[in-house]
Image (cartoon, rainbow, N blue to C red; front, side, top):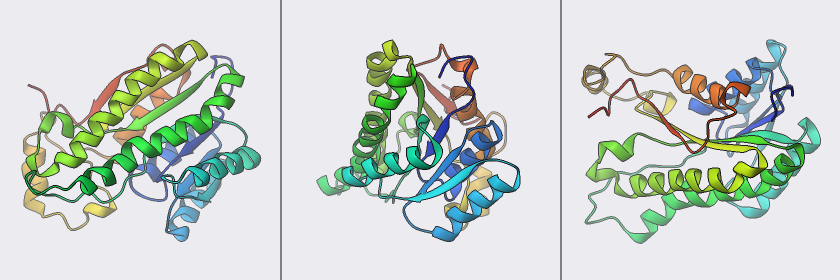
Length: 251
């Protein structure tokens, strides 16, 4: 995406709810036609699309398993047909994140996390890059985590996969830079969304007390970082990992 171009199509995985839905709405506000991608929950995806359209934006919902190669190929082809070539890819989809002592974690536990955070991003990147190259550039933003700095023993499989995901960001940034494609990671802290509805109030309070800004983050904080990285203003930013956690992991 060059400075002179209007915003092109943004594809956001896992965007029927949670962080992805807020990111989708924000990029639509920025002028991008938005592909709201979901695996299940048609009504939730349709609601995000309706919200965007109600504000004058352009959006379509697409059901896809973004861990399946054939499904990803079909997804990108469908999005291109209905909304235009993907110029911004936001890799946000995630799955269950079970907690377990590292001495009991199985290889399948690791594979499950690597499927979401290495396999899926790779399939998506490979599917969108040809069109980005044709247009002379694009943006890839991966949603990571500050769990790398927190070193939580019960999250070893998730942490390893998230570390691998950001390593992909750095390698892709170097490999795709000559094509004008930037690749970055946004690494949120604990940002409460729908799946945290049952979190104890005392846990939320304890976490917020440990954050230098003395509050929990909002999904809009993450969406703002993604918006920046997708904008012309971030044209010279690549290979970075931006923590959005209020300073929680400062040394």
